[in-house]
Image (cartoon, rainbow, N blue to C red):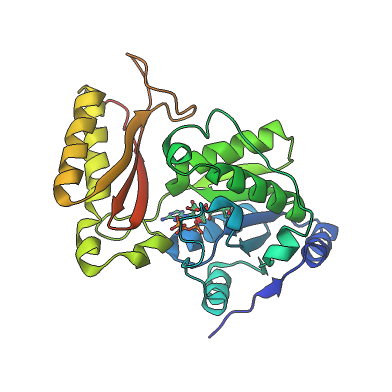
Length: 285
Ligand SMILES: Nc1ncnc2c1ncn2[C@@H]1O[C@H](COP(=O)(O)OP(=O)(O)OP(=O)(O)O)[C@@H](O)[C@H]1O
Ligand SMILES: CC(C)(CO)[C@@H](O)C(=O)[O-]
Ligand code: BAL
């Protein structure tokens, strides 16, 4: 049985639907995505449904956040199936604007969050987070939700968006959603579809390596040694490591000599496919 979801494509229609809910005193949560919906996105919608009366999901493959040699054209698209999965998870409305609706002729504004955007994915994907911050600011202002949910899989993105709404006084609560993984530990990602069978067999090592590093750091081992060993095992398996770091989980600053919490974050290529993942360093037992 297919569940119904309404699709709107313009800011005016989106605002009209949200205003109708508001008139009934209903709360609204938003789950922005780029489509190719999987269980990770669906978990965010399910979480949104526990936090608000109505859930708006959006699908927009945002050209501004892709570099010139990245996979904007190849990025998987399939709205009909996506809409069914979002409805199944509990979303009532799908906002799927086209690029002209989002960026009409003459569009000239860029939102730049400094600091948090500089390292990790920001260092290897120049302009990526300007594209993310610009589109997320627009999506939140277009929809006006009470809550918006983003996955911890894109951990740096989540922190940047929290900073963005605080700095711009956008009246929305940003909530993180836990990473959903395959049974072998690989974080679900639309880009997993690019992996060959041989690469897919190696891919779970990404999470295994950072999990082991996090355990070693939690056990009092040196972060430097733990990361070196994780990097060596990833490279031996055929990954090309982009970054592999243990950082402060709020500021993404380097860890001081003594710290109470940390996050291990990694990006690595398998062939042409760039995978990211992260895990918390568990508190000492
Ligand atoms: N495995 C996952 N668990 C939880 N949230 C996820 C997961 N994968 C993606 N998300 C979240 O879903 C939202 C939309 O992400 P996006 O559409 O880019 O999906 P994706 O699968 O991460 O794709 P990509 O391959 O581009 O990273 C983001 O907030 C992202 O953090
Ligand atoms: C937040 C987002 C939908 C903005 O395009 C995208 O970066 C994503 O899917 O994580
Ligand atoms: N999930 C983040 C979107 C991107 O990689 O462009």
